[in-house]
Image (cartoon, rainbow over all chains, first blue to last red; front, top):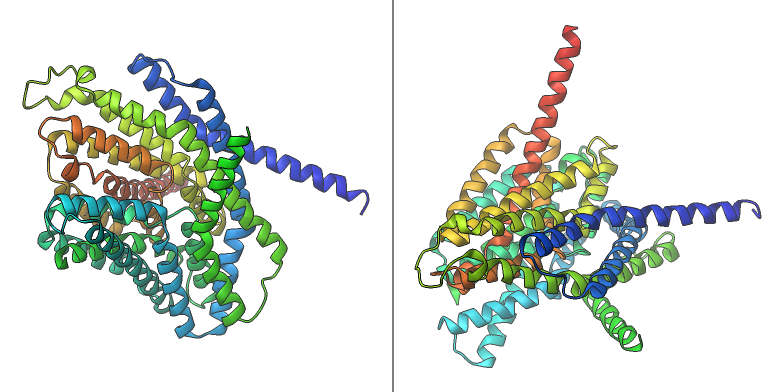
Length: 252
Length: 261
């Protein structure tokens, strides 16, 4: 034991350095693009080099920790939950879990809160709702609830799809048709916002958890392959908000 | 330094608050529904903490370095002086915005490559496919898709054409490709549309969209500023499906060639 400890420590050390180097590579293109445009195209100096370098170091360090935590924490948690659900064999609890995971992670999503407030401002300016603080707060909250419900619904449908083994593209094509049809009848002010709301629901923590859930479920159910059936939850969770938000625009 | 540390502690608390609902759902189910502890809870807890620490550092760094600069560059690139417009004409030629398209394409490519959620999905895909799908290949394919999508999206804002038409056309291409693409890639391709638009890409892209919509004559930021994110979610699906189709076609050609020899 006494001999192996330093070696394992060194391995850990190397692993961290390797990951750090990987993060540097991941971030290098961003830095390259920013420098190229600022210096060569716009012909302007970089406003604050110290901040840029310091910030980039934080980003690189952050990405390194995130990836380490992903493999050590988020993926195993998602997988353990998926296996526990599959072993329990209760469709009821599976659906409750899927819904609360989708709803719970979305309702508190900071990006969504920002977008909902923005949408309330647009609606007030456009005269869709009264231009008062209360009306705007209600509108924003309603929108957040709508999106969170739609994500909960999406994860539930996605999980049922994995259970039943429905081909993914049928579900997605049905979703696309829903989006197209809703666009025809929805008020034009809401369309751009609705299309964008699909993107804001999938946060950095939700994605790994939901992916691990889908892959874990499909690998513990006989007859499902993780590659063919495991993915697709995220896709569905970014489609349904578009439909639901346009429906919200129609009703309000 | 002290101020910075306090600010960082604040940011860390904010991240904790954001992940609290997720942690609550997981804990309630594990303890009350499954009634069994996690295996190796210490390791999981440390991992979860790394994730929170990582996201906080990442966002702090972006806010320090990238977002202000991205805002500034979006303003500078779309400013009438830079475009060469005098401000009197009603319609500026779309070609005047050449650098804007190039900026949209390259910043979309670069930020997508650094997107943590995409890295997560790519690692998972490479793991379960036993390395048949390379994490780098997938990330490159997605980045190329975002890059094309954003350049087209910027073009759409400049010309004022209908968002709806582009997105529906994108959907139709996706559906046609789905019919021909290898089955194993379909779920992954659909998912990669959703993951491109999170932490890094969205703020930069939003600044660009609003900058364009408020400086191009005849555009309304309220109506035209949105929609770039939608472009960034549809086009990666097309490129990932395309990547799989090309890879399959390539390996079939190679096989035929080696059989003939």
